[in-house]
Length: 239
View 1 (cartoon, one colour):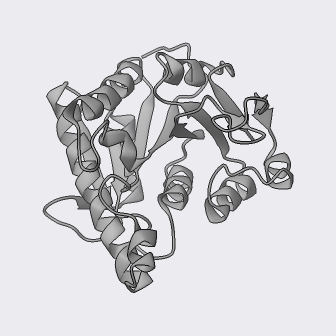
View 2 (cartoon, rainbow, N blue to C red):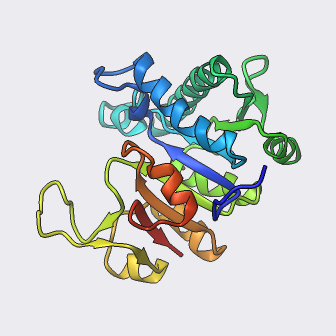
View 3 (cartoon, rainbow, N blue to C red):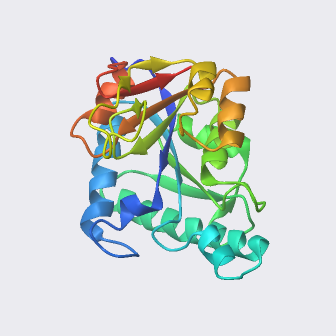
């Protein structure tokens, strides 16, 4: 379908907290439905969308480590939680008439297919939303790194990092009213200013492979559509 969007295939990185809404943890059906409805609009317009979702609504590996757990086991628990989140999103997409499939870095049949690049690209080309779960399959890597890696593997044009702020600021805008918002940044500028955009491994992957990153407020109405059109009032472009 012909669109007016600047990007035709993107990977959206969602935090697990996006799915819990006002709940302390777990899932809030209205919050999950809101996520799906926003993405549905751009899928209907012809944009190919891949997703990576975190696990913060269920589990954080750093919490387990702080409690004395082995870091590797704690990270594996987080990977399992991302599969649960991906399955939840898939069901909600199906409910609104959007075909979706889950691909996991860890063998999880029959719950999810094993990640396969060729099949993922084919699914995206057919209009399916592809949800990548299970992290990278290895501990010590965050879902930011998963997002960068899968975006590169499936030839996405940008990673859209969904946050609660409309871009990258010179400091925390919730704490500093004088914080300056950036429309655009180079990777080197973001590093020099020590701006916390993504974890260092994910950021390096994007920088070294010329993969654009856009940080935007997912909860602002029409922000996703604006970002896809190249409207930088809705987010910060890092390239």
